[in-house]
Image (cartoon, rainbow, N blue to C red):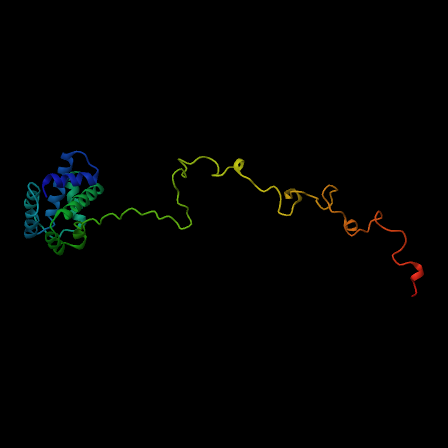
Length: 215
């Protein structure tokens, strides 16, 4: 880790553009944080940092056992800003510091700091990956030309191309020779005609004469 990469990371996370502003803010936070440490802890931390960041920690004073609120107030005094801004700046700079430190140095500091101060050095958790959109089983898979942007209006088979059935299965409309049984041109005749029982084909008199009755 060098000073440039440290300041660049602070600037990127804080959305800050001016290098001089980022350097002044980092110096105020590190000098105030050094006051929460005892001399041995301050030297161990300075050993893991490049110059001039290490010098901010060695200048002192090293009071040890300061509360989280006292740290924020010292940062506000050094920056000449409101407490809310000081809290935001402190968490930003110490968050980057905790990620840049070797793990052994960070764990040593957290053992001697109060839980609240030690938490300021905890590395940020990585952001979760974006959710993967899974297609539902009943959702049709859209192919080329089937999206709202590329599809054509209307259905895939317009009504003009459809060939609907014009009548039901038993309708005379679908018969090749409707009324075949009753048309004179094609009919075999009515029931009387087929059984030769019409007046034209009948013989005079009954089939059984009266003279034969009673026998």
